[in-house]
Image (tube, rainbow, N blue to C red; front, side, top):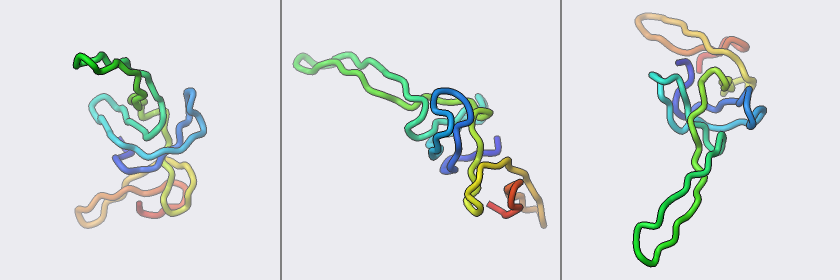
Amino acid sequence: MKVHKGDTVLIISGKDRGRRGKILKAFPKQERVVVEGMNLRKKHIKARRGGEKGQIIELAAPIHVSNVKYICSKCGKPSRMGYKTTENKKYRVCKKCGQET
């Protein structure tokens, strides 16, 4: 997976298409990411104590990594990511501007 926790991404499909957000969690084995404030789902919480009420809360659900596009921190444009290695060090490179991220 070429996007990591903390990266800013653009949603390219689904109901949140065109919106930008920050990755909160990444699940590499499932190829999914949780983006802050995107793909919200309602979860019904049952009352646990006698006087407490049940409630409905909104949670950010995971979205497939193919539906997000990395936004380069240098040029600010959505682009693909590549890798370069020098002296046993591997780093990510923006495909649009060529800058190391």
